[in-house]
Image (cartoon, rainbow, N blue to C red; front, side, top):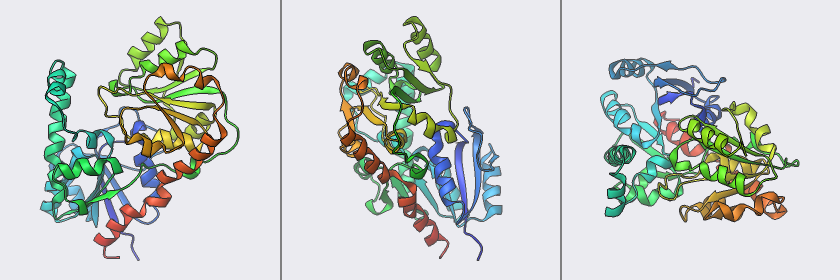
Length: 357
């Protein structure tokens, strides 16, 4: 029996800061014939990726999808709905979407003061425009051609408040390949930070921690964007931390094992850091995790296997000590909730329904 065909329509690929797409593809590729089309190349690409094509014109994308004749189309991010929705209607091909954090959190209600504050900067104005675009796009989730949207549990009330039908939403935790990171052997003694170097990550807090609590080695796995500014600040401070160039996904398990603590920084003012997959990967690798307490829902994600902090200074004594064994053990268990081997059926059940199998 021929495998059902699934067309991935991505904004960019293979982006090293979006390895959840790589993990998802690897989890489904044996049971489905996958074709990947993206509109632009990745600005930071990883090496080992699936074949893909870049098509920039909507007409070329439509012709390619029509020729491939998939059972369903699949996208990542709610801001891509305005592209896939009309295409689905035109070609009469259903679609699925995996939402993420920044796009879901764009649906939060904003007070007048917050709006005025954002209008003071060009970045703020751009962000408000993007938020408005996502609000308009989510109407496509109610379309007859939308099979369903996989969303983080904290995002459900936001989407329902935006008018999305509850039956279109499927609660799903982040995507990691748990088996790749699962390692109970001893960890190193260093401290790590990680993520795309964006203002919402407030990585200068990691630099501040390195200054406040010298002793262990501090290593920041920061990717692109404002990394030059962080590098300059680190140089002015006397290089208290090492800034590591982007690491290939296959090398990340060993990178986690060099560390005993992960400190995941975030800006409470911006507040759009969601449920980072690095948290679950680190927990699976035996790393203790600390994350800025920017929202109550993070307690559900970390469970009893992580520490939420309000100010990075609170961690100065903690990170110089070993991770408590009970915290480490809880992390091994909590990380399993993000294992795609456990929850990939939430996506593939939708595809199988479209393929009548």
